Length: 313
Image (cartoon, rainbow, N blue to C red; front, side, top):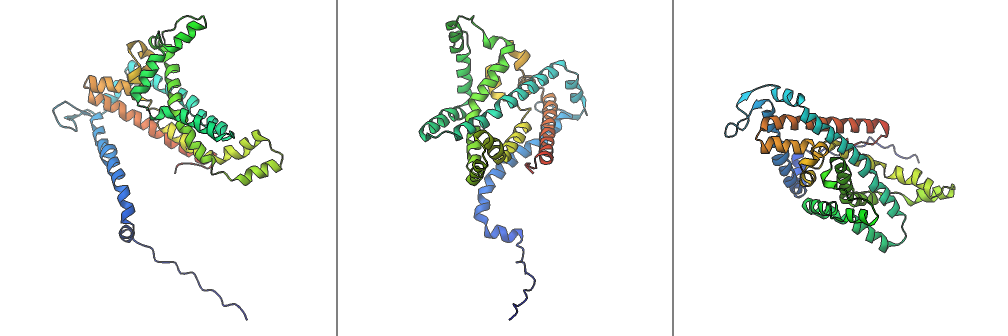
């Protein structure tokens, strides 16, 4: 007997957003507070960017008194001090990205090869503990360690070298800043990559071993491709915050002697915007910085989508 011919598949009716909200309203309540937070503290303040094109006087209208066009944009473009802090921001951003981004990947790969679970947990705990410390505590420890009588100089004197005033010489600040950034962030980044490593199918390693691949080739051809989506996502996010070099840490670490290499856009904005009450000028610089960050993250996402087939959107 011939099998009966199947008719066309009938798709279930598509629910409207009202029906979905009525059905899953408990889930949507969890999203309400984060959305409210971003609305109040991220999107509503964007209205204030209008004072980059209007003259703002304290005590007057919150959106500025009069339209001045691109006057403040021309001011910071022609300001040599701005281009000095712009150069410092680029240098510290590139240095942090080049040094701090690969280290969590390397540490995660090394921890993944450990056989002792106790030692692995110990290393993880020690490495990501600084992430939970306050920036003030981190900065205070760095200042103590790198001071003239600090641990770093005590080691140098024990080795017969001269004392180096690390926090008084501008050329040493990038090393100190990037070193503290690695110390604070490498452990937390390792957790993300270790979580990604658990998603790799063990059968792929078994097939690689059957084909004669050693541990190094397994890492190159199985492990790294397996965590590539995580690597690309974090790289794009880091590039997006490329211009936002850590304001709090630099503000706590630097002093006027370190301005030639430590003064970045965020600290410059703090001085000219908050301390000098030049809010319109600071808003113009902040808008310029935000546009650069937006351009960087869009470009990185497009390049990643075309080159490796992985992107944020």
